[in-house]
Image (tube, rainbow, N blue to C red; front, side, top):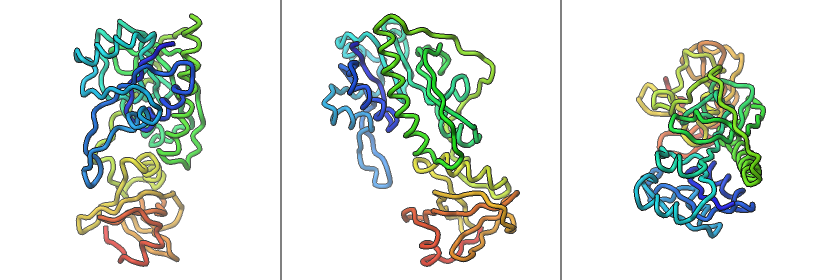
Length: 301
């Protein structure tokens, strides 16, 4: 089948790589424009754009895919299906009705519709998550679902690990959906409203670890926000100590205090304690806690 692929993130890049190796290789890839990223604010391309170049696919970068020029480029490709994955732009008419728009969404819809489904599943300590291939509609992630597949959440994986597993699954599921669509055998089922939840974008205050909460909650937040967003502890001096790896323990530590013990760093929580494994000092890089303790004094919270 002739396809056009719209995507942005690392997740989308992985799905694109799988798609490009199938019989449904995209005639055109659409991503947002390059933009400044990171501390140095160097202009970088979206991961999906880099993947398209590496794969030798025709690439268009557009700030708004619904404008006339992008629309004409997509129409000129004469696609049988419009494929959307972690794109970050709303798809509006006439694209929704002119083409068969399929969306790869990393959750078990209707649970976790919205911008941060992987993070929210980890933070909620769900026992499983998964991928759905659905028809895109105007309402956010509300379209009928054609294919879905679940994976277990093991409870010790961070965002990077879970996202990688889901992206590989999403690529396979999308190719399977296109095979069925090409044969006229792809069927859709409306989503149930039972169990509907929304995965809101991660807000800035959610990144701060509150020691008054249970240690299990904080460990889940750290896993959900590592490595792309980052959780942190705020020190009494107003600095941020990034936390990139941590586990909950039953150790007894005064709530809201840090204790160094045999090369380990423990945070007293409302219930239990958080054992910090990897931290990031202000202006520095992530490092194991024992290395941090050798070069830094113990901060006060």
